[in-house]
Image 1 (cartoon, rainbow over the protein chains, first blue to last red):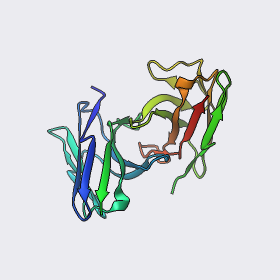
Image 2: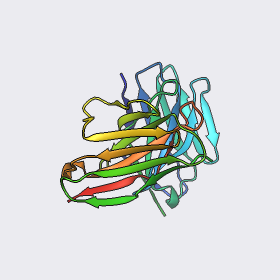
Image 3: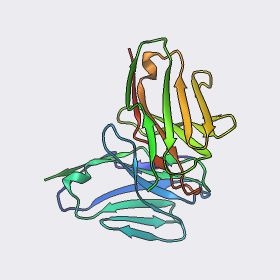
Length: 111
Length: 115
């Protein structure tokens, strides 16, 4: 019940395209859903996060869509650029507790 | 913005020796810090929660005596890998929450190689 399932495992997108990564969770007590971007040899960096009282949050080219009834949330990267090539992790936590990470998605944006 | 500094970024040690990794919150106080381990091409796995002034809480399957955690101040937590073996080689990352509400900031990680 503590798992966060992420898909796809890898994704190849053409420059300018839309990258979509999906996550699903079981624990309805989760109340914070962040997305992290990680480059090789670096720690994860927070991209964008959402709480379950809203269905969508947009920051620049990054958008989180949240479906509380389906217990799913997704990251959309608009106008994907080669510099977006990285590993993306979704995560979830409960009231300031520990983060539970998804399995990660390796995104490659082709020029 | 909130910064978590981790040191060293890379360390190579001989099998059987101990290695200490430091995690500092530079511009905020952190009563709680988290330590993760990440193997190549895998996700981050929480090892333990470090609590200032008290004992760390370890996740199931993590050896307390092997991974010693000390959180002696509100800005510093240390992870000591004792009697390191090649299988302990991994990427270790710490995090802390400057907002008190799940807004975790991660350090840049430490690549440990045990030879």
